[in-house]
Length: 612
Ligand code: M6R
Image (cartoon, rainbow, N blue to C red):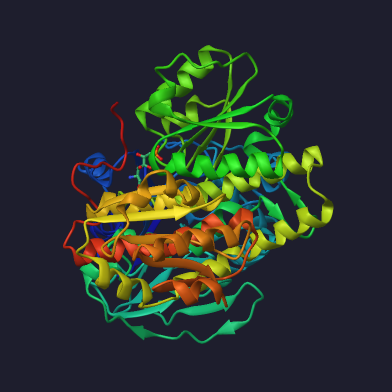
């Protein structure tokens, strides 16, 4: 996701800022920019890499001892120079960088437009910087107070840094929901999204808390107050990590970092879309196509790999909750088999990268046949997002590990929201059931946190089975796609052969494989046709297979027969794939690490498959 770096002190700011942005590159981004204060504010921005920004400013005067810099991962508006940060206020007196999403930006923008403000970008950030300026001028208050008042009007998440030519010795920062770290030097201050850009200058840091505003003045003690105007005493910590650890947020691999980001990424996927107070679901990106989707006789989902597995969960959800017939197609097959698609049919294309060649080709084919394309992508402004008529971004943040983890759970979250929205429009669920589901969804991130805290257990299981050559994953109903996804995770990063199957299909072939050397992972929560899954487990045990079972907290029946059980919290059947897939991600991760595999960049694989 976006990266923030800022500096105020007695050194040249530019080299510190550029180096800082480079240190944050691992987060993923699509454009970069920098503002330097030296009398007035000079801003430089480019689409693409930080190296391009570096080239762009090479022969320019960037002298100045205060500045802010940003790498942007597009959320509002496509990735281009115009939308890149920093953004100026109308008078050009303020320059601001921002991470996060201002959910009520449209309303704020409307008000500002009425008051004569014009906007050059499509971003929510430009709205915020102008809102601050408007308050500062009209309410005749100091800049930090204007920031405080503005932030009280904002709904959403933010980490911001502001430079002002009227206050050349001061840098203002604030956060809610997006991290910010302040580095304390000798009369100088550093600011960044994480400690990576700071650690080489100082080990003394303050992690800004939600709804706190920091006023960092060159040569003076810094002040922190809350958005409720209460002074806070900063808690200065000493950094213990070294640089290489910090780049991955302290995790050894991006994959593990991304697994642990899931409570946040799932929350971000639901943010502004699920409202348990009003009992509604709304997906702004598809609002204009809701009637088309409702009128469709069936929905076809096209995707590849993990995204195809998310699509399979989508099939169960749409049919079960919204009572719409769904077919899920491998994009690579669909594009070459003359599929029956008619005018007005709806095709949902799912892709993390938004660049997968087969999925893109499937879209083009479906479009030619008259279908309406709804995209579910993670990367904003990607080819698939642009080729779709409408869609919903998953907002999982950049996924760097080749094995998809948080993107999968975010895709399933968005598909669940879509199914719920259709159910709401069609009235296919009773109000009580609908509300129960909304509440369960809201509780999901907390339950994911709980699943992630099963420290040690998946590692212990991985240690036991790391040298096997085959693995079987079995599940039924909503958990059949989870079995497929668990098997894919294991094979792609540990190179162990793994198969996913519907549990009851086992007796039609795979049962022949079962002996004392065959580990079988069962996804067996106490839901749906639980007893039948228990029978399937017994069939495996009768043939001396070794069973690892994902079960609901407090389960006793499976515990009696399985070799290992991993407990996950209770939730609605529809939401179980999100919780159940997480221990399987961790299991695959530990197995791969123990086998010495390159977890983040497995052999022969690419993060974005742009070839057939
Ligand atoms: O970017 P996409 O979601 O379109 O990518 C599709 C597949 O290439 C991808 O999910 C792949 O299977 C992952 N490596 C699985 O972890």
